[in-house]
Amino acid sequence: MNETVLHALIRASRSVRYTATAALASLALFLLLETASAAQAIFNYTTVSPDTITVSGEGTATAAPDTATISFGATATADTVETAQTQVATAINAGLAVVKANGVAESDITTDSFSVSPHYSNTCTPDIQSTTATSVGVRSMIALPSNSSPSVSSAVCATSDSVVTGYDVSEDVSVKITDLTKVSAVLTGLAKAKVTNITGPNFILGNPQTVEAQARGIAIGKAQQEAQTLADQLHVRLGKVVSYSSNNTTGSPIRMMAASEAAPANTGVSVPVGQNTYNENVSITYEIH
Image (cartoon, rainbow, N blue to C red; front, side, top):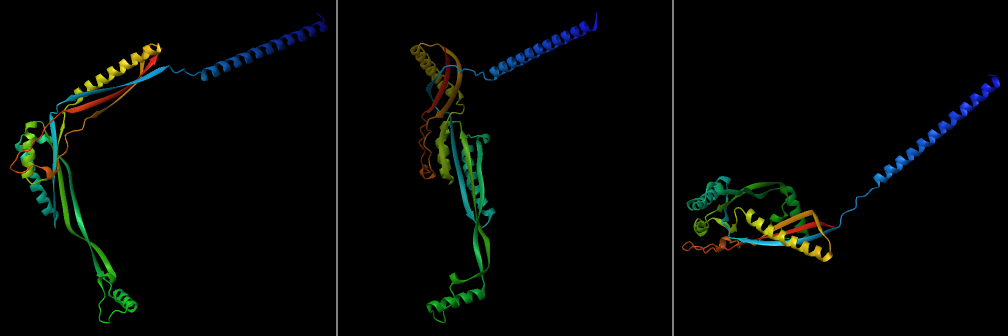
């Protein structure tokens, strides 16, 4: 093979290689662009929220209370903490003796608060020179008699100190009574014991979860019925529950009784118990198809 033919073959081989390389590069670029486009489509994908309806329901259940709570306290003022505390302790112990005599267990007696608050008085040691100068100045302006003495209000204090002059001590106790037949006797006994700030009775259920569940069941039933009625009217089918929320309230308890309303020592206290009302409100969201 002569040299001319050899060079021609080499040139042809190079041309084929260049063409093949260009084709592969074009294919790689195409695949890269397609991959990027697919990735962009994935990132831009948005989940379509399902169609929903939201309904609500209210349920009510009532029950007779089985527990009463009463609170009482004592306050005393004295020159020393010890004296005031002794007076408070005497009153509180008398009240505790009443509730224990009526069958209230130690575990149902709680100290809600105990506080000691000092009383302060400011003392003034007059600055004689400043007080005299101020007095003379005032006398010259309003022509006071020469024998008039400086008033206390015109005195200038050289030093001023706060001095403790006494103490207030107070204590508050709450009790839980599970035998409601004892409530009247407890209130009467506390009035005789001369404790102050008698508050109660507040009638409650010791375990309200059962009654609350009854009210919640009624509320859910009403909500489900409303959802089905609405779905029939819209010609759609109910799907799964998307969200649920609830809140509950308790009817107003028996009115609190202030200490001034406590019964006289020689009479009993009439304490109607009544019933407590428990309300439950629910909100349910359903998918619809």
